[in-house]
Length: 93
Image (cartoon, rainbow, N blue to C red; front, side, top):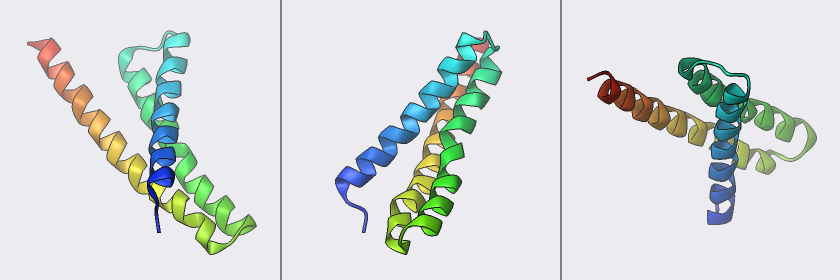
């Protein structure tokens, strides 16, 4: 079962990963599209890896937070994509 602290940690980890990806893209002076792509990619990279590592080195119950992380990653990446798409449309007008 997913508790509020676990869910909060999962969401915070994902958002921090996305922010780190965007910041890294900015640091290397990537254009806005590459920054956004890097942000989503880094935000999602850890999900599958975390599940595999949890299953290999710990019990099956330890994989529950990482499995939830997969869904959080999909939701936040989709939401950010839509937000960025709308902001791009507004800036184009």
